[in-house]
Length: 134
Image (tube, rainbow, N blue to C red; front, side, top):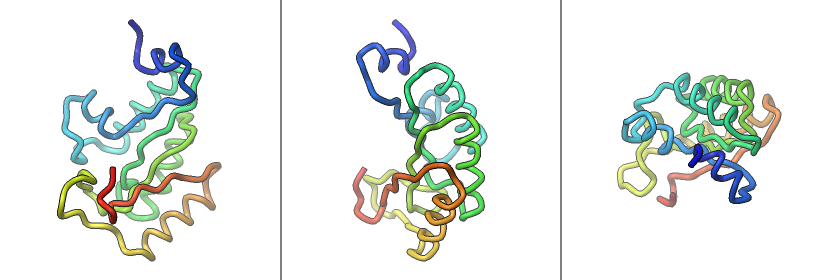
């Protein structure tokens, strides 16, 4: 039995998804924003080093405003994450299945997305809490 990234390689997977939920649970925490972005990046680094497959990281909310998001994306790039998810909820976020989520204003979200796209080497996948979908 190997590590999950190695198992994904062995069954012919195309990429490894490193979720915020998975990283939080690996640290013994619920996925409610208790880990710092530094801790998330550290775990992503270990995951990237454990596989030859591209790793898709979960940036959650990017830990705040556009500047926080850019710093998170720079760190994701530095450790070799191939792509990432970015949510439109305010920090700290709630599970997408629960009521009472707060999403950032449309203009703020647009600014976060544009900044990431302009200043990073890759595009992004956006997750919307507006619809309540996972």
